[in-house]
Length: 340
Image (cartoon, rainbow, N blue to C red; front, side):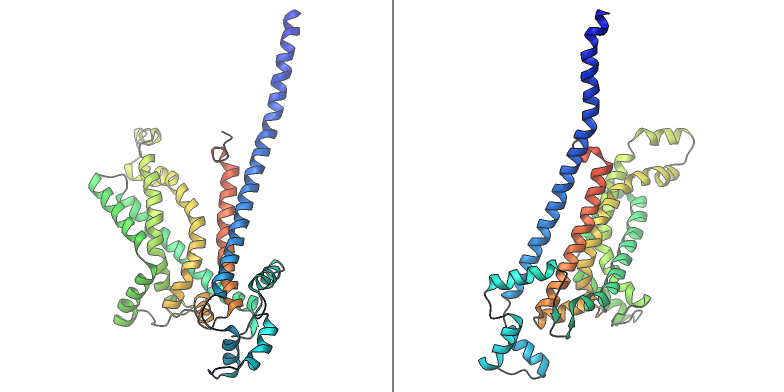
């Protein structure tokens, strides 16, 4: 009887600890999710602010540019001509007031009106987003197609071959996209005439831009796969599978590769956002329809609303994709939230 009495406080304490533990884990997870979301919102605010400031200090008077575009005459404008335009668009207001007004409109999903194209910015972006997004997805798939066979051929083998494979991936990852695009354009479009010089949304018009984006990304993905692949080759399950009679090629393809793909899948979340921003530059090189050409023209004409709309959209997609990947890993892997 005394034993039961003495053990009951211990049992009660253990029971309370078991009940409190899930609550503590949930609270910790919610705190970390809140911090990730707050961090993403802060980055987005910083992007909006920097974009506004950079575009505001670009050389050239916005009112003069607007009048020259609408009239078709590039001439000097008098203060009397510029005054109505400055008053209409708020160019004559203090920079802080312009920023607050601009930020308030963004909070209401109002990206403004393109004075170059005389259309709402949202409509322009909606029309041009699909070609850019298609190019980004095609480049991501092509990067995987390049990285996986290369890793299987060179990773986890003798030292020289593995070192050669790693060196090639490093070189690929460091190649500038702009340089790759120009080189491919000169060789395969102008020299061999296998592809159109002026890109389009057709399959042939997408090949060279997709390769341009895919080569550096394949280097990054290959590095991520290679590191985990070589670690997985040292795991006991490899020896166990070989002992059961499975060939080395079968072990590498069916077991080791499956484990090695996890870090690269995580990297793909970052890659999609990176490809969307890279596609803007590549589209300008290949004169391909999409956000790239629109952005280049908007910058040259100082179309503030259109430039900021495109930059903010790309930044928003990049942040959201990475935030989703972070949240998934926080939920799935307790080690990342310090709850293991």
